[in-house]
Length: 93
Image (cartoon, rainbow, N blue to C red):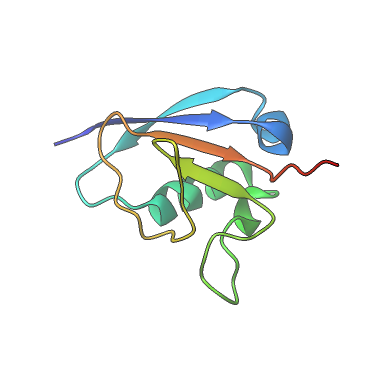
């Protein structure tokens, strides 16, 4: 079964891709890691650093949510019509 995942981009990721929203094909068994690797191949810069090469987790420099829930593991399985948000953490005081 195939479908699509809606990818919402904010902050520097939106600037790099030149758009706020992407629709990416998803197939059975596809993981968040697969999606992020596809985005890195397409857009390079910064997308390649979302997965920390030392910990193999989502970097603390990025904030990734799947269907409104924070994701730290890139091995989360994706399914058709999931919504993935990619942005940077924001702090304030």
